[in-house]
Length: 113
Length: 113
Image (cartoon, rainbow over all chains, first blue to last red; front, side, top):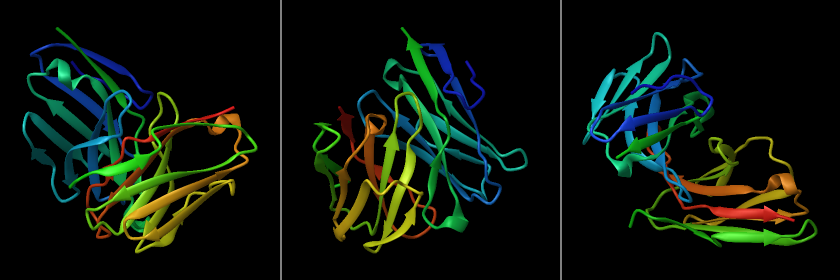
């Protein structure tokens, strides 16, 4: 399943399928990006990051892709599990403002068993 | 220890009350942050401290007053709040150097009545 946009869309996927969550960032000067997962009642939890000199980075079951030309990030989750159900946010570090980490709108991921 | 601890977890206060939110970390991070998060929205940056000095204030109303008494503690003093200030207040910390992840606490759920 795949989601697009910045208005807290919902992505529903079947357990075991791959998920793709998309994010458009705003500042072409941003040079560092993070994906966070936020479960209900909890703070955001780091998933994976990527620097602007890379276009792909892989973690355990997750891959982040960065397309600087169109200012787009995606998070791919392989073999999605019920525990992956949460809100996912991308965040960009705006270098010219110091340590200013700005969040995108987020995507709700629902995993059906 | 990779925890950011926030107290209290929940707070209900009247519009004439004065209260404080507290945040503590022992990761040796010298950048600390306050974010505000409304329901179904991304966290919004309020303040950033670097080396215990306020480095970013995102035009936050003066009824919110941050304080960083030492490198491990961050407070947010609240006075004369409005009901629309009800939200989840998140504290985060990171290393000061660029391109580094921020670790978040679980947040304080604030209700102004």
